[in-house]
View 1 (cartoon, rainbow, N blue to C red):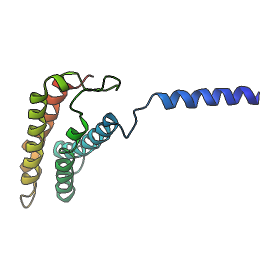
View 2: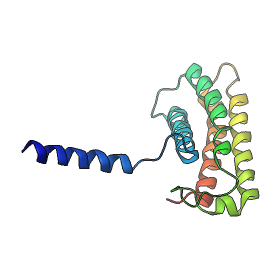
View 3: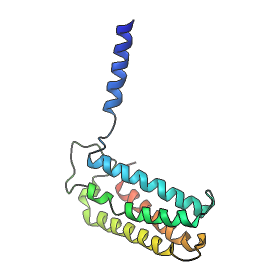
Length: 149
């Protein structure tokens, strides 16, 4: 009975270890950054849409964090696609580099504009509604072109 239990446990552990992405791989690092960006942008968007109470100080900090994060994932896209790496990115990322880089720059510009808008005093949700929607639109455009769902 003990041997059977150990075999089942070993099998479960082996199967769970095989399914993940190496957090130190480019894919793993990109995923971690994009997940953090999603968490921050959902909080900011929630404040604008009334799902989360609007807090000006938290919004300013979140905008700055989103701007910082929005400049980092691109370094984890190697110049050439690693054929052995499973990824959610379409092959177009590597085949259409110019367009991909253009959208990356648009995201950086939209998060920078959000930071500028968040500095208006006293900060009102209406002052940052359009800039956060621009950030969300830029993310969506890139996902539609380059992410394999």
